[in-house]
Length: 493
Image (cartoon, rainbow, N blue to C red):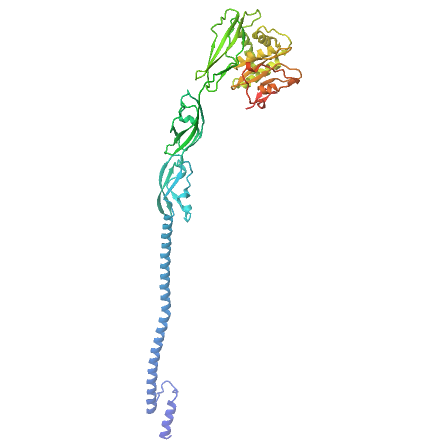
């Protein structure tokens, strides 16, 4: 092989990978120069590329971290804003709650305290309001100031409740009808039914009535309560000159026996157009109770103005007959019966009903009996259990008197062929007719009828109750028949 061929062969070989690891790469000078230049160029490009990659990595790193940092900042700002907002809302709510608490409430005396009156309508947490006092325990009948506190959402506000009496008293006027000689009534007597939360109410005249003027005038009164509330009322005053005397009714001639106790006042009443209780004086000074005869007894009634009237009666005294029975004996017999039919807690009306019923069904009617004295007739009725209408009336009389029931004997007048007697009793201040005498075709009895009811009575098909009304007090006008059970002898109340 020539040298040229050998060199070319070496280059050719060395231009590729050596056949073994120990092969040495040989390049021609031109190649080495070119390779050196190429390596320098690649080195430079590599360095630039590395720097470019490094910068790109840095840029990429910076691009990724920048959005994360901004989100954190935004979240922090939003959180701060939310906290500030919540605090502001809480402060605003508290301020609103405090502003919506009513600091002063006034109610009228007697009204009920409503706790919600201290809270305005736009208050949110009304159910959470706390009161430092129990308002239900405040006595609103008394004017007063109550200071306390209301707490809403931990905000405490001082408040005050004022209980005030601003309403003047009211009343009903009582018109006055007075006689010129009467004393001026107290101002409080000219009104009634005074209404005011506070008592007492002072009543006084602003102008006093002139009692010397017999006419009708208006007198003004002032009503003032404890809080100073004032009302003025006008009271009509009618001043009258009293020149009318009292009226005496119920006087009647009396027949008695020597030694009897005379009840002059039984059945006698005195009325007057002015005086409530006119004075009644009975002059029996001419009577000699030990000597038989007829005497005059005078009744004189006088009112507060000095007007008077009088009535005279005859008192006939007789010697006691042999058949005479002393009243004490009769009352003893009457009490025996009362012990069996009367209870201690009975009213006078109930007692009277038991008495009339007992005589009606326990004494038998006969056409003739001893009427020489009322005591004889009553005694025979109790002991013999028989008698005429006079007996029935006197049996009732004895028992009425034992029970303290005021009574009178009424006589039929006028009569044609037969007399009749019955009782008049006073119950609860009113007079009523009673009759226990049996009647044909009538199995009951008469109890507590008024004059009007007695006149209309037709038990057994006839009446028979005629009498001189001028000799007896007028009866009650209101019926009590709806309260009476005749079968059971009971009274309903």
